[in-house]
Length: 176
Image (cartoon, rainbow, N blue to C red; front, side):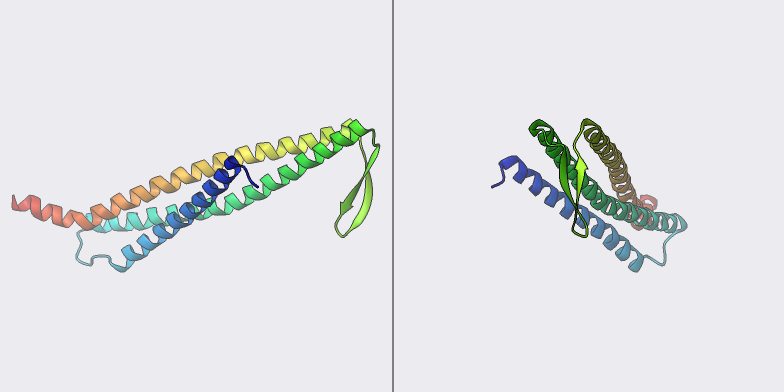
């Protein structure tokens, strides 16, 4: 049975994944509706704002797609890091027990033996450190993509609001 913190983490990841897909779908849905319902009688400022909103939404959506693709790569790296951690743990147990070699199962199922010593453990710990730095770099990249996606989306919304509302605003302003 999973403890509460693991259950909460799993639930949080599922909610985040749903949010990512929803936000991505919303972005492309809005740009699709904007393209289909563009006003033909708009003034030049409105047309420029309309085109700008399309570009902002499309770039925002592309950032979202990169984020989702990158997230699955990060899961694979995290899984590989977990496997390395288990290998280090098994090697340390083997050293404590005084075992000089352990059997290692490779694909296709071939058994080979690997020496157990501090040099092997140091190599595995270096690989673990490399995985940690990759995950840290991927987290920074993901965060940058998220903020780029978010602010481009907001810019697209503002731009489309300007393009659709400027004509009415100018008519009200001139009638005063």
